[in-house]
Length: 450
Image: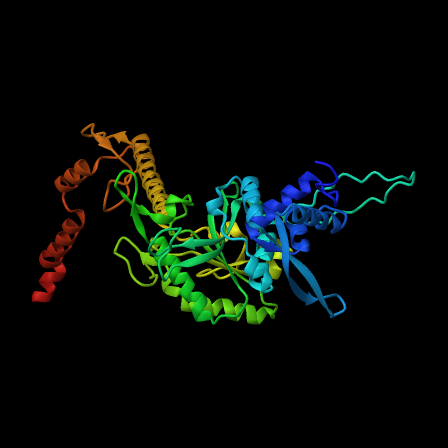
C-alpha cells in the first residue's frame, strides 16, 4: 500500500502487532500497547503512528481518555484506543480465532475511561514481560553514527499474547455464549502449556469490592469447575475440560488473584488473608490416610486430597511487574511463603508423595530384614568355622553351646560331659563322710563317751 493508505508511515509489522494486542485486551493506551508488543522501539511514536494509520483505515478509534499522575504529580491525560467492528474482524484474523469468540469492541468502556480494563491490560503485560527486541534503525541523512541504545531488562515472562483471552464467560448453567444468571466472567484466561500452565484463570482486584465479594467469585469458580456435561461418548466430563487441558496436578484449574491498588505491604497481606479465610471451603483440601479422611492432619501419616478444590494463588501487580511471574511473588492459599508460580501451583502433601514415602519405608524395612538375615548367616558361618568333634562321641561341638560353663576347644560335648560327671563319685561328699566316721569311731570319740 502507498502513502495515501498509511499516511503516518507505520510498518505492517507494527500495525499487525497493535491489532493483535487490542484483539486480546480490547482497550489500551499507546504506552500499554508499546509494552505489550513493541517494548524495543526507541520511542512511543512508532506505536502512535500505527494507531493513527489503523484509525485512518477504520479499524481503530479513540473515543475516551484516561488520567493518571505524572512524574511531577500533575495529571497526565492519555488517549484510549479500541477496535471498531471491522477492526475486531481484522484482529480475529491476526489471532487466528473466529470473530464470534472475539467479544465486543469495548467502545463503551473506553468512553467511561476503562479504569478496570486498563488494570487487566497492565496485569497481562506484567505476566507477559514481552522481551524488548531491537528495532531496525531508521535511515538518516547524516554520517554521524546514532547513539547505541540500551534496551531495558525485563524478567522472564509467561506464555504468549495469543494465549490470552479476556472477559471469558464461565457458565454455572446455560452455555458459554448464553450463560445463565449466577455465572461469572473471568477477567482473563491464560493458556501456556509450554510453561506447564495449561489454563490459569486471572482475577484482577482493585479494592473496589469487599473481600467477601471476591471470595464469592472463588465459590462461583468452584461451581463452574464442578459442572458436568456429556461428551461425545455419553460420559460425564467437566465442562471446563471441553475448552482447556488438565494440568495433571489434581484439583480444579488454578485461579490467580492480582491486587492492583497501591497500598502498603501489610495492607496487601491483610487483603490476601481476608479473601483466603472467607474462601477456605473452596480451596482447603481434605486430610486422608489409610484410616480414613478427617478435617485436619493428625500425627498419623497420610495425604491431602485436592479433589474438588480450587487452587488459589495471589500477588500484587507491583511485585508481578518487578519480578515477573517466575519470581517469588505468589502466595498460595494454604501455603506459608512466597513462591514462584510453578511451585505455587504444585500441590504438596499429595497421595503420590505418601505412596512414595510408603515405598521408601518398605524399602528400608526390606533392607533392615536383609541386614538381619545376613547377620544370622554370618553367625552361622562363624559357628560352623569354630566347631570340632567331640572326643567321646564324635558329634559336633559348637563354641558357646554349654549353658553352665564355657567349653574349651577340643572338649567334650555337653551330653558326654554330663554323662561322665554322673559316673564319677562325689569327691566332696566322700571326704565329708570319712571325717565324720573318724570323728565317730576314733580315739577322741571314745574319750568323749567316757
